[in-house]
Length: 407
Image (cartoon, one colour):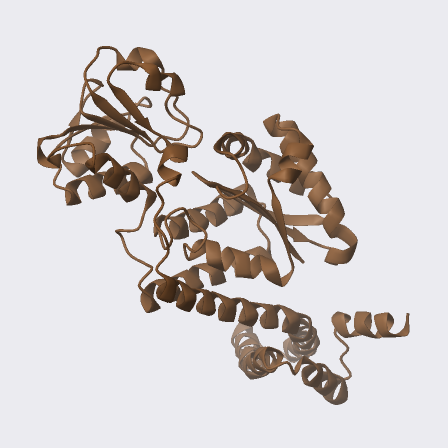
């Protein structure tokens, strides 16, 4: 069963999100390794969001409270944030609500900038990291892949998607009101990752041409060569934009009294907040930028919400049908293995086995699809009854339902 712990710009401070973004990945990986009931975890940590998606082996009614308490304890120990503070700033989603929430997040409906297109890539990279760490699970794979598919549908069907919707572009729009012509503006980008590339594209769309790059990790030369800009460590420019993984720039980088706008897009923050007290410097950090997030376009937003709701309902139906489908596959594949063994005993080779396995896959495909369709129509009972009548198969979920009915 699926569980999600979510903390974001609506229910938590940026200081708390910053602490979680550093500590959460390692803490949840340890939780999977040490827990008897958490079989998988995917952590989504962005500039304004922390979420832990957990795959729980036991029914939620039995294990969700324990899983939440264990996760909060692990996060508290890793981040130094008190458990009570975490509990006050983290919303818990269970069962079918997990899919609805993740689909909305991936579609940009829960972002500072509604419909922003960066979040879908961040969700995909969260799954990639979980795969690399060995913490994902079959159900989490299916959940996150469906979230990506839903996001594409929202982007292609509504007016919410698009490259003009991003936190970077909102920050640059705020800076534009304080600057003159971007074509005459000297800009230094600190960082060379995906966010730096997104920032560079947004700057060029505004007409900026004097763009330099600085990388504390030494990657500036390669980034500059790739994108046709120059390398510089001179912070005496008109605009400094930071978007690195962990670098914190101190006040010593911002000497002098020239007028500068510093845009800090990092979480953890990339710039010491004390620079805001230096003469001539205006700091736009994530908290400041969030106060200027635009209102949603209501019609497009409603359409997108309807698409997300439909996708979540479909995912829930597939999840409900899964035990019946697995039971059917287990039954058929057991018969298949027995038949292959008999064929091998009579001298059949690899070609015969391959043909039998292909035939079994073809025969299973239709009933599997139909089972999901019937579950979506609220007719899962028909699927379970049919399996029992035709094959004598009782999915585990049906046995639990019978036990609950007689309890």
